[in-house]
Length: 99
Image 1: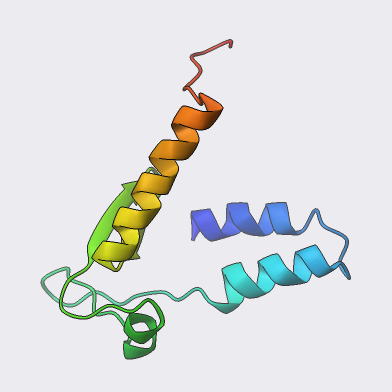
Image 2: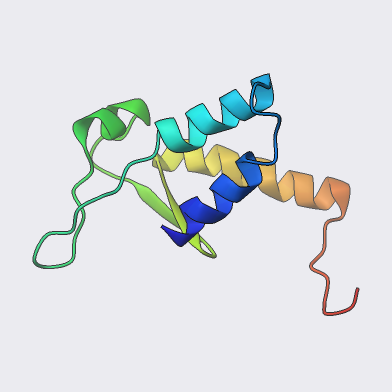
């Protein structure tokens, strides 16, 4: 919920009637879901989510700091390659304190 609250604060900065605000609110809040845990601590993904991202028997779970993403494995391979290329092209680098 903390992550959702942070995102909401950022969306609230947009003009209340702007197309950008509507798009972000629809995408972030309209498509988000809270997942339930079973007694063993596992989550069950809703069928609608499984279908929307094209999952079958396998999934790739990608940790990204405060969040994680669930990908169809081949789709993530494409995304990971694109991300590596962008990092090289833009020469992105992590900045230390004070930089």
